[in-house]
Structure formats: structure tokens, C-alpha cells
Length: 546
Image 1 (tube, rainbow, N blue to C red):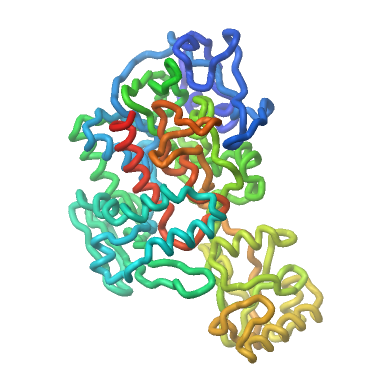
Image 2 (image 1 turned 180 degrees about the vertical axis):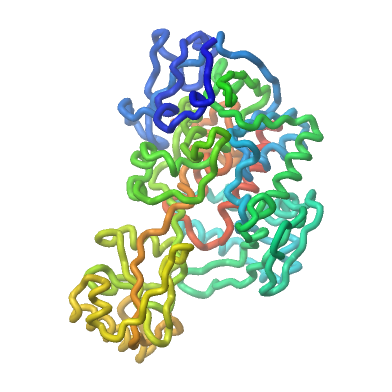
């Protein structure tokens, strides 16, 4: 067997994408995606998106790696359901499968469960007991679903969205029911400083805006929203309670272990080959199914260039690190699924790249001209600025608004007040007369109370008078790349003909059909919420449907 050092285990993005350079002794077992006509060769996976007839042989991640040699596999484990990736969706799949009666093995390349919500985040649902207690308004789920479908250009799967709408409340209750203590915070109340000592704090966000042009429903609750103590914050305690529950039912967690290749026998996914930090390979058999929940591909520039070229230059900042100290979210789960015969959902895909809400302010391009209704949501504004010349826009506020940061963060600095339009134009880099005309027109619209130029609501129109404050804004940093494997309403991965790949399920950010062309602000917190709900569904179905 080839010997690996710790440095060998620290696979770079490029070395991983190049595939395993092992011999082809497992070809007879049908290594997923590898059915080489000659031993020692590898095949390109046809199609970059669902239904595509193209073959991208020059794109390395679409070429299945050589099969890992049977001689290099040092151990074998058996399970009913194997889950690769242990974020919120993978952990939900694990507990759901275990509760259904499955022997579960979970593979995760980090040192523990690895959820971006571990440092505090929103969880979106409808009708949880905590939302009812906090006085959330009733939600017309049909109206929410129809608006969400409209906002995603009808590219999301309505059956999957309806499953979230119908089950998310009970799923959130399920997510929190094993925790030692769950405390609902009152209006304006914050989680206490210092260690939380096992308590989960929920911060309600019960306000909604369903009457405007860009509705947002009251779906989100913040969970321990304080990143100053990451081990005790966010989803940590619910996730830990799930791990304990799975282990109590005989489940096993293989941390610091990488999923490398799927194995297919007679057209069915039956196992996954994994690798530990020392380089040792283990075959983990799945009598029922494998669930891939390995995260997105936002840190894989090659995949971004293929599937989301409009967002390839966005900086992916909301990251996790594996046990070897390498950045995560490289699309390994997507690749394994492609090699197994699955396909990606049809493009375009949506980057989650938020700006702050900057209603009540004037937004101009680098020419000094207004170009948009500034009352859009944070995600939509990011999309708009991404398409501006130079991918830049400038936020201008005045005396009535005061300084307001376009893109807040730890490095944000409030600008100095500017007494003249000439000074403001110098910051923008535009002609002063052009900016003066823009501000004059904006003030006219504010005075008449009707935005006949861009349709901004009257309540958000306030004249801009000196002193002026100017902020340079760019598309927001990308939290996650929303795009994944095509799937059906049971979370089964689909092939190019739209048929399920037997024995293969997808969840979380490996799963397509959730967002389509846009990550809308229609249902705040839905990214984590739908990962929880569909992860639970995938885990149950992986065992009961196989």
C-alpha cells in the first residue's frame, strides 16, 4: 500500500480535482462514474447541466478519477445508510434514518460536525411552537410559495418547497427537542455574554412586509446569534444533541475522513470509499442508500467558471475548514454524484451574496446616475450592482439620513461629511453636474411623493441635502453558491433522463431544485430551514425507499 504523510492528506483543490491516481482494480465493482473501456483510463462525465448533451472533456472535475485500488482499501464497514457530509442537512438525515431503524454511518472531513450555522444564524420555518409563542403572524403558505416560485423564476421545485412549508414548523421543534434548555428571548433581548452552557437562545424576528413590491414573510428565528463564542453558539447544541441520539441508536461518526468515490454495482450505488487523515482507505457499504450532503462549491473556481461565471470573482467568506486545515466547499459531493451518473440542475445558479438593506438612500453608478429602485432586498441589490459597470455603485446620504454604511462589516469606516456636490462627485469619480442633476431629480421626486422614475415607495423617499456622505459599494461577499444535483421530490439524485440514480440521495447544498436563478428574500432563513427539512426527508427516504 502507498504510504501517506500528513502533508499528502492536505489535498489541494487542484490535486483533488485531478482525481485519485490509483490503479483500476475496483473497476469490476463499478466505481461510480468510472466505467473505462480500458483499464487505467477514465471517462469524461457527459453534461454540465441537466439535459445537456455537451461533453466537457477539458474540465477536470467532470472527468471521473481512476478507481481506487482494492489493494489500498484497508478496512470495510457496513451500514444501511451512509451520509457523506455532516452539516445541518447531513445531521438531520442521520437522525431521521436512525429513527426509521437504519444503521447509520456519517462521514465528515472536519474534526466535528461542520455547519456554517454553528456560529449563529437564522432558521426559517412556518408554525413552530416557538414562533407561535413569540406571536408570529399567520402565513398564507400558498401565497408565500407562489411568490417564492415567482422570485426564483419558477426554477425551484414547488413540491420540495411545499414540503418545507408544510413540515418546517414541526422540523424546527424536532431540531430543538433534545436540547437541555431552549429559551425564547423577548423583544430586543440578547443572548447573554459568555459561555451559554448548553442553553439555546432563540431571537424572534416576527415582523413581516407582505404588502410591498418585494414581500418578506415572517419565517426566521435567530439561534444564539453571537459569533463571539463559536463553540457555544448557533446550531452547536442542537447538532450535538442529534449526534448523541444517532450514536445511542448504534450510529457511527467518522470525523476527519474524506468521501472520495462512490461504488456502483449493477447500476446501483452500494458504497463509498473514504480516506482518513493518515491516507488510509475504507470501504463503507450502504445496504440501502448513500446521502450526499457535502456543501456547496463556492471555493472551487473551476466549477464556478462552468456553472456560475457571473459570480466567479465573488469572495466566498462564510467558510469551514477540514481536519487537514484546508478550506471546505469545493464541490466534492457534486463531483461524486456526477461520476455516479447524476446531473446538475439546469443553470443559472444563484450566489447568496447579501448587501445590507439600503432603502431610504440614493444609489448611483460610477457615472453619477441613479439606475435602480433602491428599495430592493439585500440579495437583489447585490445582483444589480454585480451588473453595473465596474461592479461598483455609490450610496449617497444626506443630513436627514445621516451616515449609513452600504456594506457594513468589521472594516467599515464612516465617511467624512462633504459640504458640496463637487466633493461628493470627486469621491464617486463622476462629473459634478451629472451628480447634481441626479440629486436634484431625486429631491423633486421626494417632494412630490411619487417616484415616477423607478417606483420607490413614497415612505422611502427623503430629500438629500448637505452634508453628503458617500460610500463605495461592491457586490456582497458570497456566503454560499446555490446550485446542485438535480433531484425528485423524494430527494433522489436524477440522471440525464430524469430517472433516479438507484441508491443515491442528495441534501443541503449538494441538492438542486431549491433556489433556481435567485436566492430570494421572500422567506428569510429558508436556506438553513430547507436544509433541515429536506435533510430529514432524504434520511427517512434513504432507508424506507432505498
